[in-house]
Image (tube, rainbow, N blue to C red):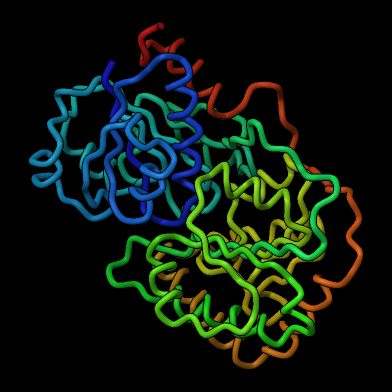
Length: 373
């Protein structure tokens, strides 16, 4: 059975979810899988799966209908799995693809209105994390599933090295052409770490994507022990479990993985709109997140914005806060590094035994979208 897999080139959260689904499919004997994408998401899948997948280079976030069908011979496939790419449903709305298809969404609570074209899918899978049931009443093809994460074979190191720090910037990228915001964001924090007392005593791993790594190494003038790495999913989680301190952007997938693994990261300021909204949610659970509302920038799911508008506003807020509150951010960073951390992680999300990826496979089999193996 030939399967076409698509996601959005917007952070590693969607790619990580598709990674978990594909890994489950491969384990169950589905070998004819093609990933269609570009940029950092393409690099991610090639790093994690190498030659186990086929690949089609294609900007699925921007492509139009004519080009899509010119590049992809859709009749060769029997199933389309789309994780959070909102451009492809617009193509499907006006064209019968003649294949079975599913859409996987982890941010259903963030959309101002129903996603265009989602009703054309056989199944709309919604991840049960911070879910708002009222937003889902209009969908007739919906299936709620557990969070989609993959921590298989990864365990927290009980005695992590006290001098090892992990920084995670890898997910700072968007589909927007020539987007260079990551440079401002990363440079702010890397220069901030230079001012931390005795920083030269720490071994710092910086998780980044390929574009970031090339740029950072071209300007690398940092006077402390830092190594920039492009990691596979498993390598990244292993590094997180070995670190005594973790600093990361506040994406949803790693948040859920940290709950599963018993990790307590320190969240950087948000780099996009969903992260700003998520930080507010995390703060209600733990009460110790540096949200934008603490700096009088208010973002709420009660007053949702179009994603592009939200991203633009977040960037203005980051530039302002990182300029006016630099010393406060430095003090908070130092405090996190040197304070004692308790080992308890408060898990407010209830998990059942079946993982989100396993649920997707099971339901697709039950609905006849997958052939049995």
